[in-house]
Image 1 (cartoon, protein in one colour):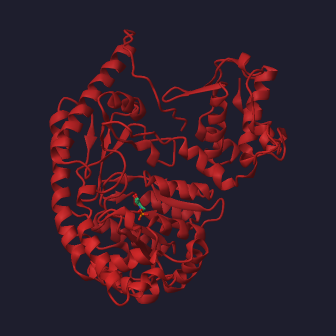
Image 2 (image 1 turned 90 degrees about the vertical axis):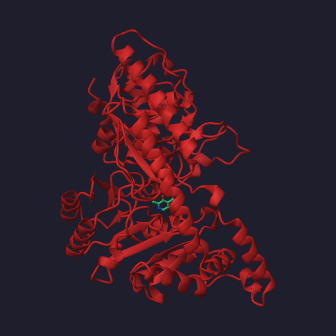
Length: 527
Ligand SMILES: Cc1ncc(COP(=O)(O)O)c(C=O)c1O
């Protein structure tokens, strides 16, 4: 069977319905007509989305649905195959009816028929997220600071003193649209301490820096627009850009940072709207871009007049040497870089405060986008956080957590060197700051399969493929090293090595036909 024949009928299938619905129908009718049979291999997500010129998440959603109907089976490393066509006639297929506006129950809202295309973009990605929690596993997954060091005692004192003071009531007003003036000044001062010069009309306080990604995407991305990203990059930035149907152009890293010839290629050929990059402690690789690479990247983007969204989500968590200058401060031009930061990682995520700093005219547009989204940022959080900054407590907090997190990073590095000594094929780069360490397994191994073995040993991590825009990265894992103390980290890494040993034993046994039992797979990975 040539799948090109199956999918070339797409235009005629269920005209007017959503593309993923038509994809499902295409496969169903090919099964009915005998064009597809059990055992036939279907194209990869990438092949089919390229062929049809549709977003990968649309194909992923269709494949997810076909798998749910029992018509196909996707297995990591093997591909996607048709299962028994006998199941076709019995398989209930709700979505095509949903797309025509028909529901089973006239007394219920037919939500599936109402969702926007934005949701199409989200669904494929969400199907890739593993479920964690609810047990006593050691977790290196997620990306939050250690809760033990949240400054709750200091916050308590500050809240009391503000409420007892004369101006306590201002916490209950709407904040000015671009943020509380005192906090804006404190952030400007904080940035000046990093060598950055930001004027009042160049700063916007955010409800967390995820909002910065969302606002910039709102401002710049129309469906089909190209955006350059690092490959891999932050999962929720990929999801945001994807949901807006951006065309993502991934550029890989070397040890100095993003690959400039790939960036230049993309700048020259794809007319991207902007480049999204994390020079400090890149999420997920933990890499810090060298000074030379920063300068060259700024110069390159300036040459092509392409803006940069610089995400400095964890620059204040620095364990080695002096922090390097931001792209924002390296740029000779005022119009090139939008810089965003957050208090979520270095302080606590619950405060939900971050900022954007960029060209005044662009910030004005962004502030309208922000008002359209949430009118104003939480006043209470801003007033309290400003007092925390004014009392010099943020710098104290940073000195404290940087010392603790440095020890935790060193503990993870030492444990990896010890426990994985027998597995030199497993590699990592020691991060200079931040939260994450990026572990690479040999190509061909699957982090999802490894995760099943790790779960048996009661340790979990984030699968690295989540951070790739392409169907790639299955042999990587992201480990968050700041959450656990040194002893727990040592224990967790020993469990991880034990799991790796069992996983590779299982692979050797399967290759030699001896057939050890693999742990039950709980994650269904489509992309
Ligand atoms: C790279 C990166 N950018 C932005 C954010 C958003 O953080 P927040 O909205 O809490 O400021 C995160 C959170 O994990 C992140 O990892």
